[in-house]
Length: 108
Image (tube, rainbow, N blue to C red; front, side, top):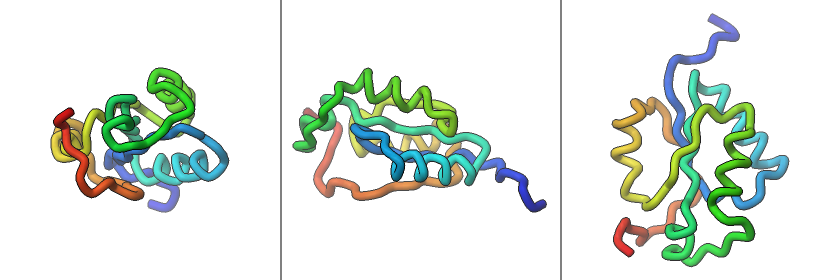
């Protein structure tokens, strides 16, 4: 059993404006916790509604994540309310979150 990857799907979210050593290490760690790592990357619209300034547009941040070898799939994060449906839709067995804005919704 030692060395085997659990069969669960790991789901995480973030802005991923700067994928430096800390972010890479976090993604590598999360990728090792399951057979698949799905990353929800915050869209430009979500960042705007949440008051988050991004140096890079969504399509560039998504492309960086797609190139990361630890990431199986990148999905758009349009709102914080979508977490429940993503967990069900992707059959996620683990959810890894950092800070979550308290009053974010899907409504513009």
